[in-house]
Image (cartoon, rainbow, N blue to C red):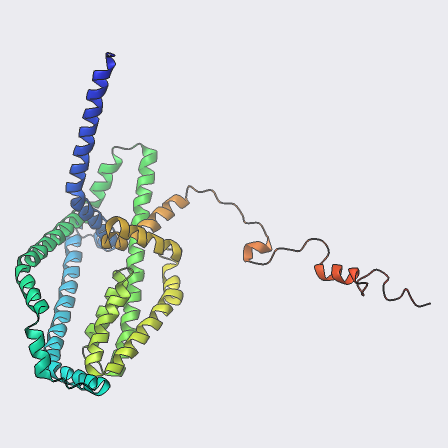
Length: 381
């Protein structure tokens, strides 16, 4: 056996053990890293407001605290308003549920010529096996739901703490990061940080403005239809449709449709049609104009970044994908050399210029028509 072979085997085993240990450690801290990433982008989002308050003489920690208090008050007010609306509407739906059952049974009897009654339907539902299994599973899943809620609250607290420290100690964090880099790299890091703040703030600004426009438009529709809780539903549609990517529009439109259905089933179809039409207007008219000066990325790139972010980090990746890609695009744009575009019609989508004699002239010349040189006058003297 060669003398180097035992040492190579030990080194290979040691490297494999380190790889397994690193993979296990990464799996254990992936949740913490995701929370830190969310907190970092949240700190970038509130950086403009904190910076303005700090520039006017307020301590940076106090400014960050006031911004977070404002966000928490707004979020709590929205949740309370939405919860009260849902509670009241659910009570109304429970009270009217027997009438719904009677109307459905009457429609079934008239359509299929059956003789069903509400008592038979209730007895069959109460004594069904799937209902009993569902009740048992729900009773055993109460502990799991409580654990999930507590875990979500702890994760939210962790994100707020990290984002508070990132925003309050932003200058100190930048100095600590630049202290380990040469001067040329320090300039690039500070420039990338500034671009990230601008793009993230611009993304949230454009989303907030579109949420306002969407909320006002849906509020007018709900008021015209006479749907109750129109202000709360408008706020729900505006926020959920803009800040939950990909499925936010459909999730936001489901609740107004449900409330409108309790008033009049045809109103639900009106709400659905309006949601679809407004979504097309927002995608092709409103969003390109608002995001051109803030995020400035192609819609296809934005869609691809959302899909990639969702595949990597789930809903969190979908939410931060667009500002992250916009920051990367703006930062790399300074290092890409660009040239003047040639004045060619094909650049603007025009057809390429024809070369040689046109085909129609060739056919006429071959048939002896007017396109033939001297044709038409040869037989006359």
